[in-house]
Image 1 (tube, one colour):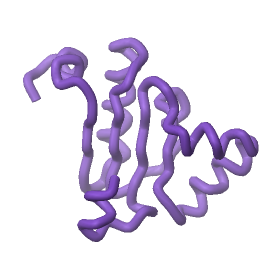
Image 2 (tube, one colour):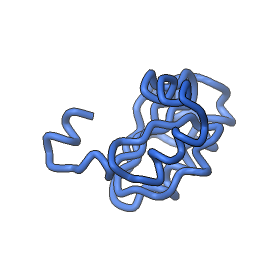
Image 3 (cartoon, helix red, strand yellow):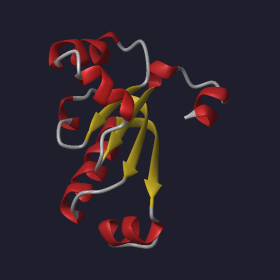
Image 4 (tube, rainbow, N blue to C red):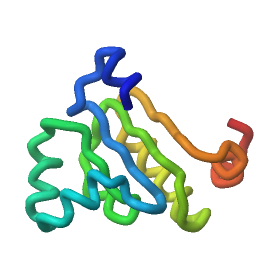
Length: 108
């Protein structure tokens, strides 16, 4: 994230999707309720972190980062497909390369 921001990307340009455990920011913000959490998404003031199970609700952003950090291969594949559709300029996939290749069905 620091590299993206240091390279000039605005925080509001970035959507982070996790396939397993939620990012601590999302967990914290969800503790205030779904309405507040999604209002932050809609305000587009900062990086937005979401879980793959609800990421379909997230709007497109120039940069989408996918953390393949758990769940089933099917869930990871779905998250990667969604992330590809939501990223308008750059898609970054993080995780175990063997698992990512397995999910995508190709050498990446």
